[in-house]
Amino acid sequence: MQYNWLNEVKKHTDLVGYILGTRAVGKSGLQTKIGSGKDKADDVARLHKMTAQVVITNIESLRNDAIVGELIKQVKDGVLGMTVVDEVHKCKNSKAKQTKGLLSIDTHYKLGLTGTPIVNSPVDLFAMMQWLGRTVPPKSYFEAKYLLKGGFQDKEIVGFKNVEDLSHDLACWSLRRTKDECLDLPEKTVQTIHFDMLPEQSKLYKEVQKDLRERSEEILASASPMGQLVALKKVTGCPPRVLETYPPEACAKLEALMDIVEECTQSGQKVVIFCYHVFTLEYLNWVLRKHKYNPALIYGAINPEVREANVNAFQTIPECNIILGNYQTMGTGLNLTASSTIVEYELPWTSADEIQAQDRCHRIGQHHPVNVIRLVTNQSYDAINEEIVDNKEALSESIINGDQTLQKKIVSKILGLL
Image (tube, rainbow, N blue to C red):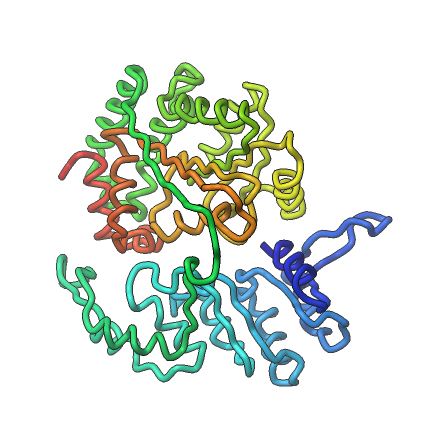
C-alpha cells in the first residue's frame, strides 16, 4: 500500500512523495527497499532537511516508540502539519500500542479515511473521536450509553442503544460520501455457490471432527479455541494438507475454482482469488502452477517490491491473468481493476473485510460489471463462516482478540456440540 500511495501522490499532485525508510539496494543504487524501523526513525528525524512534502509509512510504524517519538518532535517543531490515516478503523482499540501511537500524533490538521468506521459496535468510534479532538466521556460511560450487554455474566454485547445520538454526533465530525453519490461504477453481483464435499473429503472431515469432539473440553479450555480447528478448515479447502496420502486434488471447492478459472481465462478475462489462510493460498498456488497457470502472489511473505511488481503485471500484462492473495495483504489499498471476476475461495470473518476486498476491483477505473463468486462447502466450517459474515455479527474482532466466550460459541457450533 505504501507504493500505491506514492504512485497516487505522483499521479494526482505536483508534490514530492517519499516512503520512510527507503534505502538503496546493491552497488548501483538503482533498486530500493523499505528498511527497518531504525531507518524510518532516522528519516523522520531529518524531515526538515528533505524535499518531500508528503511522507508515507505503514500504520504499524505507530507501534515503534522511536518512530513515534521522532514524529512527536517534528510536530512540536512545526515540520509536520497534517496527518492522514488510511483505514483509520484499524486504530479502534484504545489499549493497542498502534492506537496509542496515533493518539500522540497531534498535528494541526487530521484526516482519517475509512469505508467502515464501525466494524463491530459503536465503541469502534471512541479512539477515532479522541484523535480527531472530539469531546468524549470516559470509555466506560461511552459503552454504558451505547451498548446493551447480557449473556454470560452480562459481559456480552447483545445490542445497541441511543444510536440516533451517536449518528448525529458522527455527522458533525465526518464527511460521508457513498459510491453512488460520487462514482458512476458498474453493477456488482455477489453469488454464492454451495456444494457438497466429495465422498473421500466428507469422510476425512467426519474423522477430523470426531477427533476434535473427543477433545472438545481441552479445546474449549485452550487460549485460542478457534486455532484448534484449523484441520477442519483445511479439509474444506486443501485436504492434502491434513493427510499426506489424500488424493492431491480431490476437493469439491477446488474443482469449482478450476472450472471458473478455465472459463474466465479462455475467454480472455482475468481472475482475482482471495483466501483467508496462507496454507490454502500455498496449496492453490501449487495446483494452479501444476495446471500451467502462473498466478501473481500477494501475501505477507512476499517482498513489498515484488508485490508491487506483481500488481503492475496483473494490471498491464495480458498473459498475467490470475492474482492470488489473502485478505490481510491484498484486501485493502490495491487497484485490481484489470479483473471483473473475484473468487472468494475462503471467506473472512466480517462483511467489512469482504467488502473491502471486493472494492479492489469495484472501484474507479472499472468499466465492466463485477462478478463476485463465493465458494461455500455445505455442512462445514465454511457454512458457519458464511452465516457469521452474512449476519454481520460482531464476532470477528472478538475472535481475533481472544474473547473466550464468543470463541467457545463458534467452536461448539462448528463441532456440532450446539
